[in-house]
Length: 141
Image 1 (cartoon, rainbow, N blue to C red):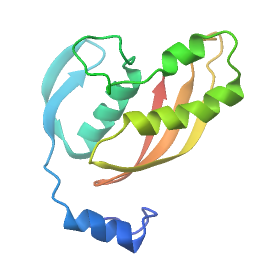
Image 2: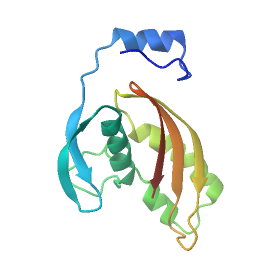
Image 3: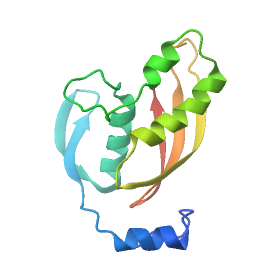
């Protein structure tokens, strides 16, 4: 599989990727609207779903997941005494820590929006370089 030239990776990183064998992902597609599994997805669609599901999952809340699944972002933004500066510094660290998947090479260029009327929410936008190419992500927590 060839990597796109505009991914912002060094030659060393590209060679490291080419030397690795990453198994193809084939997983169930989640219908978020109806709360059902529907068909299968793979490639970049599976990575999008993984990112969304991982960031929307609260860490240590669901017994079905081990301690490495999810983030503490929701709990952090609910705290009354936490500044936006702190939130915007901490979120990239938590996102990078949570998205430890062999398909994701780099996560960067974070931007934040705060939905009106939702004081306990933040919209996180960022880019991710994956083995399938660059993708833009947006998750509201």
